[in-house]
Length: 65
Image (tube, rainbow, N blue to C red; front, side, top):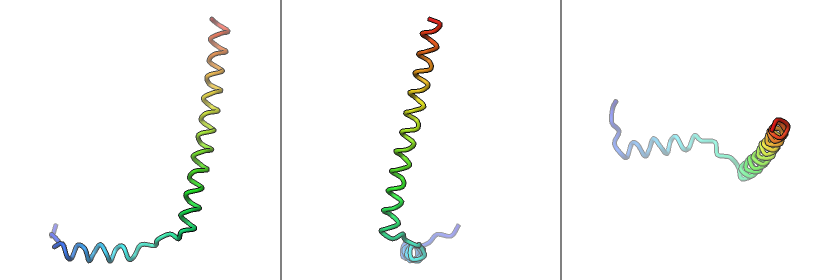
């Protein structure tokens, strides 16, 4: 593989970065809010499942114990 000198490397990096489609502030805020909402819903779901499993196991253990 051919080696690139540092100046060419920086030029290539700048060329690639200029091709990037950067999100707007509104898109970043909306995406961040959606991530927090989904994380909260996921946490609530798994907490509920955990409580149901714990209660079910306690019922089974108390029933047979």
